[in-house]
Amino acid sequence: MLISLPRPDDFIRFASRGLFAYDWEDVLRTRGFSNRYEMLSRPDTPIHLSEFPEEFHPLLSSTALPGVRFADSLTIDVRRFFRCEPVA
Image 1 (cartoon, helix red, strand yellow):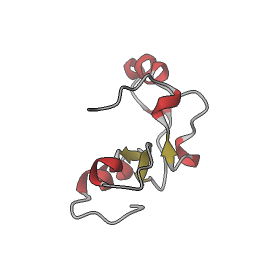
Image 2 (cartoon, one colour; image 1 turned 135 degrees about the horizontal axis):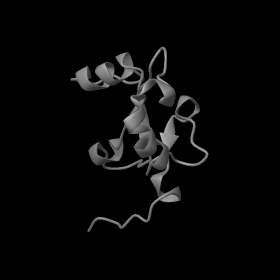
Image 3 (cartoon, one colour; image 1 turned 90 degrees about the horizontal axis):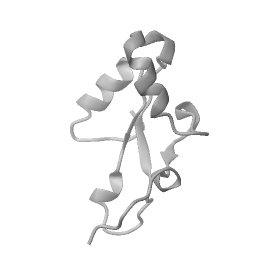
Image 4 (cartoon, helix red, strand yellow; image 1 turned 90 degrees about the vertical axis):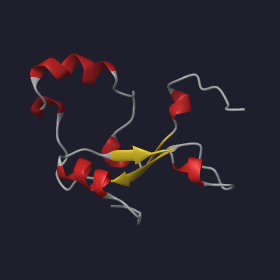
């Protein structure tokens, strides 16, 4: 875990399975918005695409974010990849 949470169970479970876990923490803020997804947990040993069942490879490859290496990205600016509409 990279931050303290009251109930970190899901994030710990993701990391224990080799996955990086991000969340939109701005939903909890009233100021100081990051406008990014923020890494909350990271695995000791990341899982590689080749370790997933083969039927998942096309889906996982098609949803990759160009230039983003999860191991090196503490935050991800989704506006670089998707058109985002402000919430009123």
